[in-house]
Structures are given as C-alpha cells and as structure tokens.
Length: 482
Image (cartoon, rainbow, N blue to C red; front, top):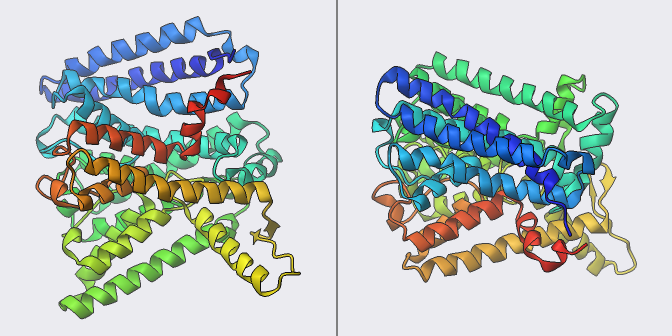
C-alpha cells in the first residue's frame, strides 16, 4: 500500500502557510473598513487549522522517505486541494460566489491561468483583488519549484532532459534541493520587486501595481481592473511586455546567473528561440494590421507587442480590442498560445523546448527517409537526446493536441458554441487566460458558461498545469499498487 503521509505532511504545512497568508488581505480589508475582513479571517482559521492538524497527524511521514510516487501525489494535491481552501473567502465574503465559481476562480489563480468569473473587479473589496494577485504569485512560485525540482525526477513530458541541469550542474554550488528552492525564491522575489517599482514608476495605482506585479512575474494574468491593462495604455504596456518575457524564461538560468554563470540565459537555445519567435510574430502581426487597417503604427505595434507577449507567455493580460483584429490574427494567436513560453518557467502550453524537439524529430525522420542507412540522432544544446526523452516529448505533444479536441467537443455537449468551446479549452489547458467567443464577449469573463462546462475547464486548467500525464498517471490502477 502506498504511504500517503510524506505528501500529506508537506501539503498540511502548505495549507497552514496558505491560511496564514489570508490574514494579509484581511488586514487590508480591515484598514479599508469595507466589511469583508471577517471572510478572510474565518477562511484563515479553517485553512490554517486544517493544515496544522494534517501536519501534526503526519509529522513522521517525511522520515519515511520521499519517492517519485510521493512527488506525483504532492503535485496533484497542491493544484487540487489548495484551491478548495483558497476559494473560501470568495464564497463567504465578496463577491459571494457559488462553490463552482469560487473553485474555478481559485484554480485559475493558482494554476496561473487568469480566466475569471467575477464581473466588476474594480468595485470588489481591495482584499479580494489582492488575494487574487497573491494566488497568482504563489501559484507561479509553486510551479517554478516543481518545474526545477520535481518534474525532472518525475520524468514527465521529456523534462528528464533537465535533470542534470537541475541537480548535477547546480550541485557544484547548491548541493541540496532546499538550496535551489531558496535561490529560486530570491530570484522570483527580486523580479517581482523590480516589476513593482517599474509599474509604480509608470503611473499605476499602488494596489494595481502590486497585483499586476504579482500576476506578471507568475504569468498569471489576474488584474484588479475589468479592462486589465486597457486601463493603463502607453508605458505600462511596454513595461508589462518586458516583464512578461522575463517571467517566461527558464528560472534555472536566473539561478545559474546568480551563482556566477552570467551568460547562461542567452546561451540557452530555448530562451533564444522564444525571444526570436515572439519578435517575428510581433513584426508580422504589426505589418498585417498596419497594411489592412492603416493608422498610426506605434499604437498598433504596442497593442500587438503586449497582447502577443501575453498570449505566448500564458499570462492572460489584455489591452485594446484584440478579439476584433480579424481571423488571421486569431489563428496566429492560437499558434502562439499552443507554443507557450519556456520549460522551467511558470508558462504553460507545449513550451518552446518541446516544440523545438518535435521539429528536430520530424527533420531527423525526413533525413532518415532520404538516407535510410544514416543514423539521424536528435541533438539539443550540444547533447544527444535519448529515446526515452523523445518518447516523453512526443507523447506529451500528441496528448496535448488530442485533449484539446476531446474537451472542445465535450464543451459543445453542454451547450457552448464551437468557437467559445475551442478557445476556452485552448486558454485553459495552455493556462493562457484569454477568453474569445460569443459567450465571453459580453462580460469578458467565463461567468456565462454552464456549470458542467466550468468543471470541464477546471479539469483542463489542472491538466495543463500538471503537465497532462502527471495528472492522468495518478488515475491508473497500477500507480496504486506496490
């Protein structure tokens, strides 16, 4: 029988931390005297109390060892259980959501998807908007921890390719996972602070700057404004695009730069490809809009830069009237969203690394057909990619495309139109946050989706954040056998 106590012990500690952090928005609401502080205090007591009881009951669990199955269970528990408690203040206080809507909002926050079911964000209590930003920030930090420490060991979606980089390379300077986590926390907090200072400098209101900084570095997309960055046109959009790019690059490179390898970031082939692909997409879309619409090129370039960056990084901020730019732009945006940011960051979707390997695998097969006697090995970053890694990547890519099709069809059975269904699954499984289609156009949120459709989208968000197979493998009977 599988020992659940190691994962439960860590999960209990995380719940205690989550509950304690609820006191921060409680203090803000108390200072603003908006009557919503009690909801956060009540939720904090329930969450922290539950976490403390679980941690105490399983305190001996970590002494029994933490194996790969425990890593799978902990990863699943973080993204499934924590949102249940994170949703409590949204149910007992403003805006008084149902369990489905509150869980949808919390899952969207912690998975850094950025989709919302709340209308009138600017009119909500300040503590609620701060809490949504905190969920994004905490979720992005958790994703970064898992991407650097757990996924390479769990061998999910080809991430075992980075096992050497996560442990052996850093092991010369940072011999333990805890040291890697502390270094990552420092980098993550440093980027957040820099982003906050810049946002304040370009004129954002203090609370908006804090929430936007949290959501930007987490590539989360929650905003305290219904218009998102549309409320801050001009310099804030350029600043947002810059920090979204920085947030979508591999965190392992930042940690290496801090430890003395100053050129590690630009020498990373996926970081270079990400910047180049995004730049080419922005150039093409800008030229397209200038030629088809006319007008001043600068606002068009700014709109395209911000929205294309937000989509490819999976952040979910929006500005302008993106959904009205025409079919060509929507197709290009769909492709950018499927590609995503870099592996090892808080971005979702396929990621640049897997797209690069897939393309190189296709090229290798074409060469093999042309020269049957030739051994066409796939190489990446100067290293030969082994068969196990390639199989993991191709399985991930195939599953990703298949699940988009299956879940889109499932949404149509709940009464959702095809365009809204396709883009809803695209934005959920890629943790992108953009809503496109008739059901979203009216409010800019997913509130109009049927309850069954919302649960399908919740599953899609979890699948996307848990790298598909890490979620599905737990459902297999073999996983639970000794």
